[in-house]
Amino acid sequence: MAFLLSVALLGALLSRGFLSVFEPALETLDLPEATRDTLYAARGQLGALEIPPELNNMQANAVRNAIATAFQSGYLLVLIVCAGLTLVAGSIAALMVSAKQSPAPESESAEARHS
Image (tube, rainbow, N blue to C red):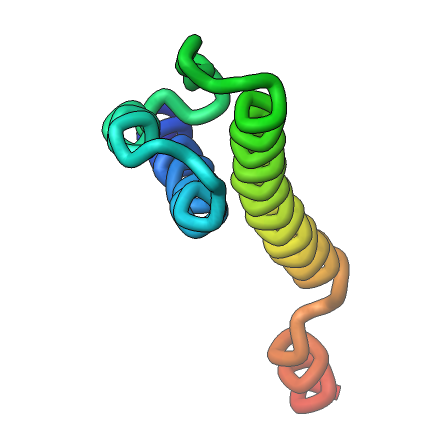
């Protein structure tokens, strides 16, 4: 169950990272309004967005670049979050291992009282 939840959360994070870059980039491109609307409507496909055939080479390359940059941005966000979670998990594991290996302070004080 946790695996499914983590995949869904990372997918949502990827989508959010993609959209935060793609939507502003789409606004800056010199595209016909109908094409911009089509791309905006299909933005949920992320990196699998199809380039509309009515675009000339320069426009198509600009759209491809916007899609690639946005996908890379979303993917980088997922990688940073995963790296952070890995560091947190490693730190917690190290603390748990060191806590098991160190002697308990209560046992030392109990021995000192009996002596």
